[in-house]
Image 1 (cartoon, rainbow, N blue to C red):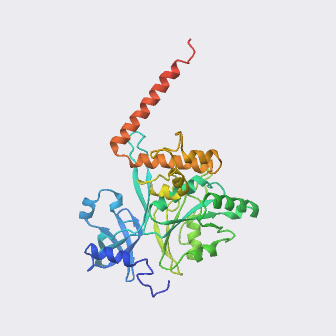
Image 2: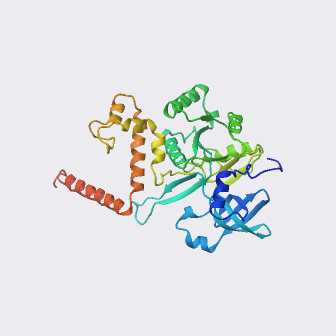
Image 3: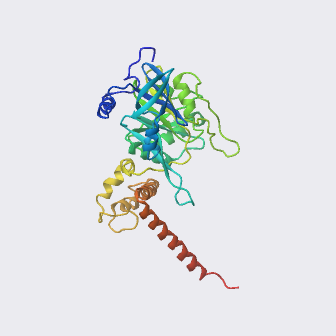
Length: 366
């Protein structure tokens, strides 16, 4: 980016300026959160970088982790000197990518919401062709990205491991399953697709890389930066899974002017509270659902269901339909209040108990 940078180069624009004035922070400088670790935040503006903390009042008023600054946020702050600062407030977020993790069906464990990145324009969902490739996983990532207001794109990494024919088959499969979503085949070994990826990243726009551990997100970003600034690792010989090398979210500024965020790998991609992302990703199923006989159709066993009819007729892919039903159930459960979830769990418990009693009738007697 060179030395002459502007706030627009860092991603600042009219949306954030309007929010700054609306919240009464017009007299304070603003900066962008470029990293966060254990309550300390590295923030950056055209004047430089600062190590910042939030106030005790903000911590007291915070209801969840979503109320704390996240990488990508714009914050108003007071400078304390010696590159130290205190954050006075968070400007409104334009987009928010978050996921649910944890399982409240396990004893003593509650589902939690984790903010992955905010104020993102495009999220590159990275999968590698060696062991991570999964269409349903792509779909899950697309749902949380679209739900957060950002646009997803696919990066199919490590394509040097495939023949041209094998790669062609996978790209055709992706295009058929996800029409309209860009897919970039890439390899840090052969450097295939890297120029395409660089050209996709525009000045002043913010991009994040999402995916499991070991798919090569950090290696790709190192190539975009032009030097190895992020530590990378391979695949664990013990588990066969990617090693967690990236341990914190970090923002990087490219010489071309684009902004990228590296994220730790995620083995669990749970949908957050709203089903909007699912409806957008499965827009053709949403259109079919409008033709169902019943407005509250679950698209599983009802007569007059246009969705299941399309599956039987071969007009709707069975795998895509099955993933839609699973994600729809997950979001519906997530949106329930606590009383509703307890009732659903009790009903499931009664079902299991009844099933066990019925099974006893069929056991041979001694």
